[in-house]
Length: 439
Ligand code: ACO
Image (cartoon, rainbow, N blue to C red; front, side, top):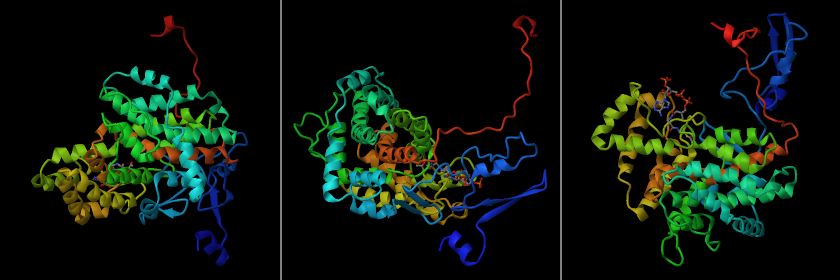
């Protein structure tokens, strides 16, 4: 029974009573889904022409910016579900394209629906030849994520009708294109950075297999992906497909709320993901494991962390105060990958760090558990992805979630252009003096 039904059963009202001590007036605000509407506070005024009370929440710590039916997270219990389905079951039983369909359309596809969806995404994997010229213009050591962000944005200039965002057919076409072309742009960015020729999509391969081909194909006439690595990559895309209102999704919704085309909004979301606090933590885990270097140095490292001299990267999460369910799945995948690639020597250090941290009072008290990034970097590295590509890999999977959230936002009658308020703390009105008179 949810909180609302419990209240109704006990004859209690689902409301919040607030007394404004400035005026002595009392207000009763409805509570729905354990949330009050911030605009209900604006009736609280001292003078009739006041703006009314606002909430101040600089990092959205307790503010819901939307109502969504896409992803459910219970951080205390370590639960993640897309459209109601537990992430563990999706990772075990589905392909990434099935999950992308689910996240965007709300239901798992039938066999026929999946075939059609796969065909539509697959026929949009190629990019215009001019995109290659654009890519060629980047410096040889340009970061692949910078190239990815820029070329996603550039797609908007190739598909001018995508700005008709209220046309469902145009939206669907953009969705196929963005899911289909993201791996192509990602692989081209990598190939450019190592000075290798671009590899065209091979539409006979799976979504993940084609990506591996575009990344790593050399002189062989047909690239044959290793099935374990192909499946692992597919599962990693599933695990990253959505994570409700995180920084990049908020960017997708916020920028998309201006009714710009989805390529521009997805470029903004990718830019948000580029930041080290969002898409870059698995790189920091690898750097940390390199710095520790040997098993003997682990106790000293943990001691330093506990003394506040650094963080145990890949541990802790704003939402999960329990084992991140994605981390458990990735840990199992790691064993299968290392059977193919050979063991990443850093794994021993990671396992020992985890063993110690899970028994240590400091980490237990603060509810610090491994997050999705603790083991993913080790797998990516073993699969020969350079560290710079990690956020790009994240973006390929997350594109499905961004598009689902974008479409949900556009079709939500309550959503408008995102325009936060501010608390102004600057000076009051003052007059401009001429430059010659300023001391
Ligand atoms: N190592 C050591 N101590 C930590 C760690 C850590 N990884 N994470 C949090 N703490 C400590 C903090 O120092 C703080 O201690 P205090 O109460 O004594 O001051 C306490 O735990 C609470 O931490 P906060 O920073 O308040 O937690 P918050 O929710 O703001 O931060 C975050 C979450 C940013 C993920 C943090 O745990 C962290 O920096 N972890 C390491 C980086 C990382 O792995 N990021 C990836 C996140 S997953 C993702 O983005 C896909």
